[in-house]
Image (cartoon, rainbow, N blue to C red):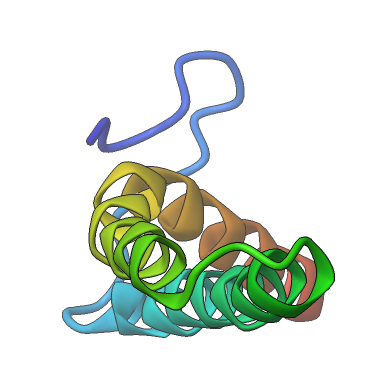
Length: 85
């Protein structure tokens, strides 16, 4: 991760533990998508439970790894919006 913005020199590095809040964005979006996807596929489209469950578990394991950097960016933007520096 870059230490600061190349254009405006905004510092991305904060106090230790600052980015723990990004876990809320990551977990929240993963939970929301999984909680909507499973019933929609299983009950809405009538797909069998086994493949739908496997797809949802795979999504819940792989999506947070991919979304990690975006969750950090969202957390940094949320902090900047709530407490501008």
